[in-house]
Length: 130
Image (cartoon, rainbow, N blue to C red):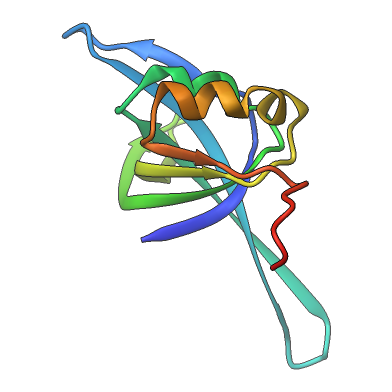
């Protein structure tokens, strides 16, 4: 499955109890349609994402960056501190494409490509004719 959206916060690297590192971040996607009255309705879906391949990508994943993710979705349910049932979507990311939108990401794109080929950075100022 693929999703495209913007990061809602900077990515964080966490270490599991088995000394594996995971990059956690959140992405919001928007979908819009017109209802029977002709009003435009925008629905936002939030995904909690995890990326296990390399922690180096975390410095590129900053709030507001537009990303295209490939992976699989899972759901989770829990009871909040207020006693109310909660639910969320987890996206287990296997591939990340950055589509610009963050000065930090654009400035580090060459470094990131040299370090790891499991993700792609695409700047906004490509000189490609298409």
